[in-house]
Image 1 (cartoon, rainbow, N blue to C red):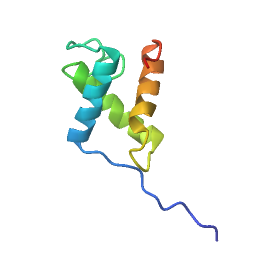
Image 2: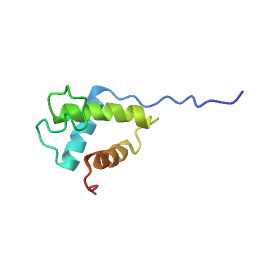
Image 3: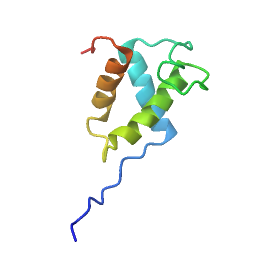
Image 4: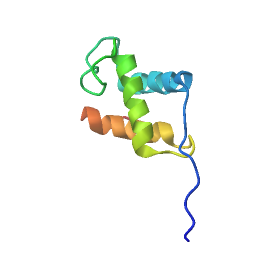
Length: 89
């Protein structure tokens, strides 16, 4: 029998997701509005911040991070690609 990776992926609560969402909004200059609801959200969110929160939750499943180290930078890079804009430094 081979050993299996027993590390569980990182789970963030809504407060942590909100903080990451706020940070990404700041970095990308995302303003209040609804433009992102259908671009990156699920279509049921009320505003850009909620759409970004939904997108972050989906990315956590895809990326399956085991810790928060470098997570913001990963999400920033993925969002930059998703929005098809130059990555901000």
